[in-house]
Image (cartoon, rainbow, N blue to C red; front, side):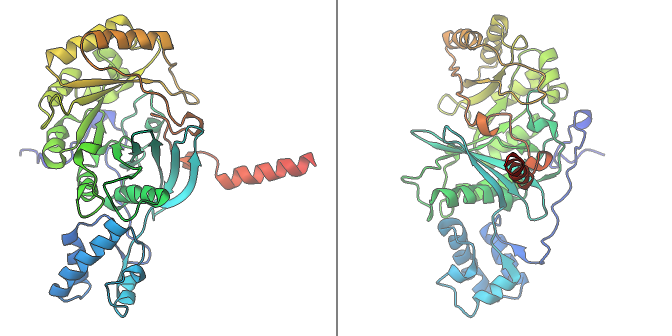
Length: 401
């Protein structure tokens, strides 16, 4: 019997928890509308007993209020009859993930620890720059891929985030930045990167549904050219990503030899470098105007030699890839098995790639002081609770007195 290629490919022996658990239903039984496209909002209204013609009109109105105006309660929807608002509130809900903790770095980077309705924690990060503001969005609670340089990769996968929990991150950021109603002009949140916790292509359907809502011109209204999805190399899903979502692609490459990439990105044992680069060459829409970004974390004495730089150039040119290489200084975390390459070594590596005609900027680490930098996201469920820290601080002050 042939395999059903529409199903999410299971990575096999490199994934200790390949199948995430499903989200649980809301305890109050209400239907969450955030994350639903227009037709599903209409279907939900009809299923609750609303007459079809009215459901079509109400779905359009509710969509506008949720995704364009950013409201969180039916009572704020002024073009819906007051008598009908309690009926909606009894059956439906409009929620964001719960904010457990919000931190601000000395460089302006913001990180939120968020909680799902069934009690699982994950993180998102906003990185402001002079000419843009980038929101780093998570797609899963935990991760299966075990990339050895990545702190998030030390977690087990708990579950996929549903479309509402993915869209909800963008809406929360808009809340914090005061950017409702949606407008393409003058906003701080200009870009989204699917580079938070999890592997987006192992949660493809939910990520696709969420990003379609984010890109809808009558909703959150971000252009697909402003959205980048990062994958560690889930080769079978890459073409579908280009065809069905159409956003920019970033690939976590991090090494140019089989042995090293097998070690630091274990998924390489299933989908090797050549297979991955061929999938990049075939990525729909990739061209010199929409280059594929290759992420390359700089690890001392592991992947940072001149020979590695020359091999990187050779590979990108061999596959005729419209490429940009982001060199990422390794962001340390307690117990990490690697060290960051020296600034001199990173500069030398970058120069070799640049001299071959390939852009290779060095990414400035952001948010390191709040563990918000690349590879540092890890749920605080495995850390001390903020209340515990406050209690300890209070006890310490009392003892000192």
